[in-house]
Length: 246
Ligand code: G3P
Ligand code: MG
Image 1 (cartoon, rainbow, N blue to C red):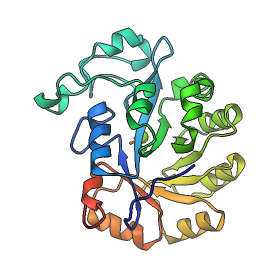
Image 2: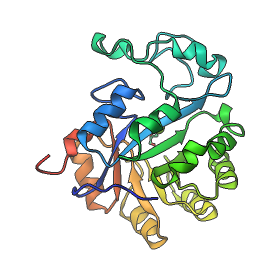
Image 3: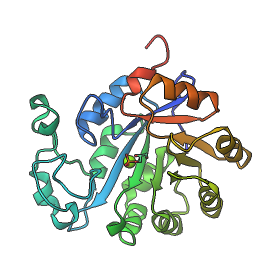
């Protein structure tokens, strides 16, 4: 997997797009992230009732859309009618839940894209779909897949030997992350900022793994995470950490 690296001290990824400035996981948030010149973008992916790959974080629609209830209970035609921007402000009214393939077309290799498999309900069905779509295979060079669910990344590896995988981790010790990374030939570990320290970074680097840390929104956290040698950060506010001169 190639990372389009800016000149900054650390790889910057926009968490759910530039979600500090635009409604998370929408085309507006991804467009803003590209405009900010980030190195990468993270999004959360789920399946609709009829098997469409859709981009939304929560398993229920209530917080970020005009809909109610589980994402997985609605067809794509139903999801496509919902507003996914008005909750963040009237200027975002009309934003829709994106389809993953539409986001791929939007980004078009201009940033690394981290696709997080979000819902345990999708495990077993979303991985073969991700692996089989020609548009995804064609974009493999700039895609990184991740999940907190070990079965999801195991299934993805089985279906897509070509896929770059990141191991999401949110607890100590991190030994389980390294075991899983080795099993799957992962590209990086993706620890929470709460669990990353120098020992974790050294262990990862000794094993040839990158360390990509979420979610880093303050200068204080950035300095600590840079000091321990992490390679990348996910931020809702990537503009706060722009390389000088941008
Ligand atoms: O990939 C990092 C981060 O996105 C994981 O947490 O809940 O924001 O998807 P969450
Ligand atoms: Mg996520």
